[in-house]
Structures are given as structure tokens and as C-alpha cells.
Image 1 (cartoon, rainbow, N blue to C red):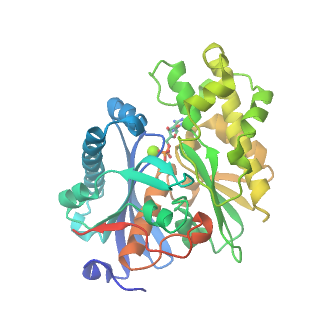
Image 2: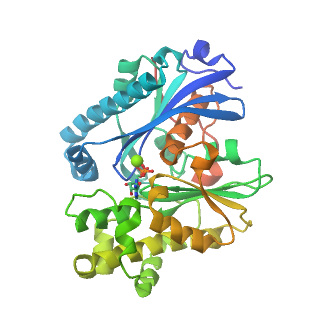
Length: 380
Ligand SMILES: Nc1ncnc2c1ncn2[C@@H]1O[C@H](COP(=O)(O)OP(=O)(O)O)[C@@H](O)[C@H]1O
Ligand SMILES: [Mg+2]
């Protein structure tokens, strides 16, 4: 074990450690929290929850990149309070006092991610000082910037968790269906490969919100998409986006896959045939995932383990099951992790590695020059 950082030695000296992770993804649905006990090469999820954002806050977050600095500054503190609240509630429901936590790992909410810009940058908000102040626990946050500063994409970061806990077995793809979809391929003797495949739920959410005039935040279980007809020519047009040809390491976000792109590709169809657009996007999302894996990963998969809120979209899952046949596709719930608990559990682990002074990313999957200790520590 490496050096202990930031006065956490006492908290981290036990064999088995409790950590809490917080994740707010591109979907802007809420903050997902997971309380996890780590013990050597195993972990056990103790409790998890997703605290939805009030509609007005979700809307603000979606527009956040265009907000003036004063609003961003306020949002940073407000989100920090929201995260602290989610953590406190989770601890209360699990009857675990905050003092028993070694650390909290908070990914934050991404306002902008531009690792390929002429001056690469990435920005996550959700003030860790507010979390530390409220819970009295050290908080590790701001994981991405150090990876970007070291020449990397800053994402995806969950692969370090995937490799640690799923890497010793057969070749498996761990697919996360958040707003953006990302995949990690791990297996005994295999060099881990990971990258964002492209859109996950973000485009589906956009169309479902338009279609329901804001009454639905997402296409519940994929029922709306199931009513539409797939436009296969549109699937081909979507697949022509240069991002899909770029080899890993690569990461993306709503900067690339957003309403402007949809409007360009679907034009009037977006308002005249929204069910068909949803059906087409659901088919395309599965297609882009399966084809990206074929394009960039040589190893033969034995299993696909899916996490993220997209697991609840039956239409999308149906496409994935069909397109991956004969490789079985399973929810990570079968491995004791509810779909939206995996990413926060991963950030609990990355924070734990930080306070132990251990590198907490896989440079070969982010493109960083060499291993680094990602994140900034706010003491208890
Ligand atoms: N019942 C459901 N039916 C269909 N999709 C769902 C359902 N529940 C959640 N989702 C999808 O999951 C998304 C949230 O997943 P999440 O893993 O939190 O993504 P992110 O990390 O981008 O926030 C929602 O925006 C929605 O698209
Ligand atoms: Mg989410």
C-alpha cells in the first residue's frame, strides 16, 4: 500500500474500509450515491440511492454551460449541498455514522468536457467543501482535471474499478448506459480497453422530453420507442459521425451529441414523427455500442454486464440482447450492484485509492502519459 495522504491514516488503517461515492451524470436526473465496504480485492454494497434533482435544477444543469459565472458559482455550492444531503440520507438509512467513513469520493457534475479542444479542459461542479463541512468526512473530488493535465481524456475513469473487481475472470464487457454510454473490456491476461462509445440515453431523453412536452424526463421502459418505426437510413447517417471512427482512448459528452446534432440529422422528423425518431435512436444506440466494440476490440467476449439507468429501458436492452447474440447480456444487478450504484461505487473506490496514495486511473484507457493520483482532497 502506498503512502497515506491528508491525515487519513487513522481512518484508513483498518483492513476493511467504508467509503461513499457520489455521481451526477450527463442525464441530469439526480445524484446517485453508494455506500460500499472494501476489503482487499472484494467489495460489498451496503446501501445506494439516486436522489432526483427538482425539475428546475435539472433544467438549469442542462443549460449550465451557457450560464454566467455568478450562476455557476451559486450552482456549485447548491449542488454541493444536494450531494451532502444525498450522502447524509444514505448514511442515515443504512444506520452508519459518518465518522465510520474513510472517505467520500465525489465525481461532481460535468459542466464542460473538452479534452480535444486546442486548450484541453474539463469542469465538474458540486463543491466538495460543502460536503466535507456537512459530514465531517474527507472528500476527494475533481478527478478528471489531473488526467487531462497529464495529456489524457479525463475519462472514462470507472475502468480502474472494473479492472480491479471484474478483471480476473473471462473476457467481459462492462457497459454503462448513462447519458453517454461507455464500455470497459476486461479479462484475465487482457490489457483493459475502455472508451465512451457515444450517446447512451441522452438523445432518447431529449426526444422523450419533447414528445411529452416536458411531462416525462425519459422514455419509461422504452415504451414510446416501441411504438415507432426504425428509419434504417437514418441509422447509417448517424453512424457517419467522425467520433465513431476515432480509435480509443476517447471520451465524449453533450458537447458533441445534443439537440443541434439531432436537428441536423432528423430535421422535421423530430416534430412530425417523434416516435419513429425514438425507435431509430434506440436501434442506433445499441448498434453504435456493438459496432464500436467490433471495430476496436479484438478479444472474444464471454459476457456483457450492463449498468446505468438505461438498463430500465426494455426497448434498448432488447436491441442489445439481439445485437450481441450469442454473447449473454446481463444487468449488473445480478452481481449485487443495482444499475445506478455502479458508478458511485467506483468513485468511492477511486477516492479510497487517492487517500492511500495509489494511482486511481488506467492511463492506457484515458491517454494520460503515466499513472497519476487523480482528485483533490478536502480534509474532514
Ligand atoms: N424506468 C426507466 N425507463 C427508461 N429509462 C430509464 C428509466 N430509469 C432511468 N432511465 C434512464 O437512465 C437515465 C439515468 O441513468 P444514469 O445511469 O443515472 O445516467 P447518468 O450517469 O448520465 O446520470 C435517465 O435519464 C433515463 O434515460
Ligand atoms: Mg444519473
